[in-house]
Structure formats: structure tokens, C-alpha cells
Amino acid sequence: MQALGDPQAPRFSQTEAEQLATRCFGLDCAARGMTSERDQNFRLSARDGRQFILKIANAGEDLAVLESQNQ
Figure 1 (tube, rainbow, N blue to C red):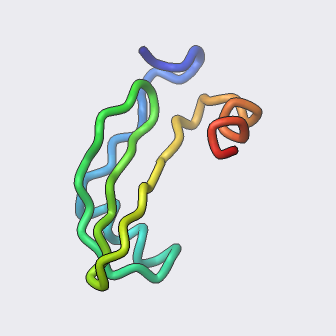
Figure 2 (cartoon, rainbow, N blue to C red):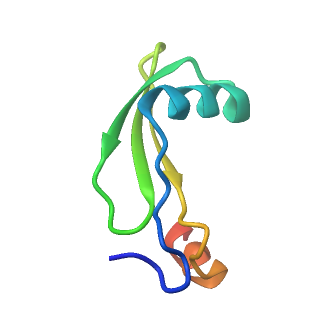
């Protein structure tokens, strides 16, 4: 299911997710795609053993919905 008004969910490759995590958060990590309804999620495994979730929201998603998910 996709958000109304936005025809496509994000489509980043694992490599692009790794590059984004490095550029935005300074993480040296490997990304593995996860399933999601209308956004895109990656499990990030940092080289030092830490684990993170990178969520790339659908551009058409309402900000209030994103804020409630983050909480």
C-alpha cells in the first residue's frame, strides 16, 4: 500500500543505504533490506557490532504520522 498522493515508495539500494548512513551518521556499516508497507527500512550492522534501523520515509507521508512512529 502506498501513501495517497505519492505514487512510489522510496527505492534505495543496499549500497545507497550504506552510503547514506556513512554520510549522515558517520557509520561504517553493512545494510540489509527489511520489509515495509510504504517506506523503506534497512538493518544496519556497524563494523563495531552495533545494530541500527535506517528508515527512509515515503515523501508523501504525513509528518504527524512519522513523528508518532518515531516516538
